[in-house]
Image (cartoon, rainbow, N blue to C red; front, side, top):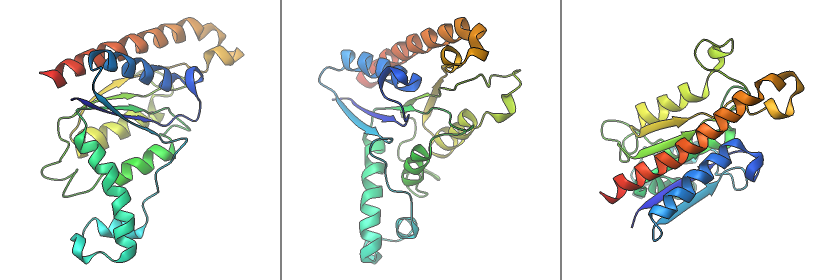
Length: 216
């Protein structure tokens, strides 16, 4: 039975969120391919995970028998998140751009699951897991655009997901999502619509691709 780990982090609900719209398209297509499969879902906006504190951090470098009471409790929550990642056959992450970066809730999840000697380091425990990141943004930060130097979402997530965790990462990028609501961007609405439709199509295609890999 294939397992999809689905992470959303947008503060907006349903179709008001470009990232949630695309992750839903992926998830729906995945479930069509795996009707008996499991989806582990975390909505980090509605139910945030704990930020790493000193107890959770230091516990990651000690044998469990040496944990203090505080360390044991903190690391148990962290270990649950790590195990969800390790047990997934595919990972789906909604990562909207807020103030040039990812939501703080998604950063907290990453800080929990990145553990050197286990998920990161010489032999990452989730290495090779196919992963889709829906990196939505209100404007465009594509190569050659004026805002290209401020693209800290894909660059950062490529570093931590692909380089540190060694996941097999693929990005879907719905952009110009503010165009329908910003009169100053009215002329960009057709480009936004093209980007939205392309992102939804890519999400469905990637879900089918990943489902096939999981079944192989």
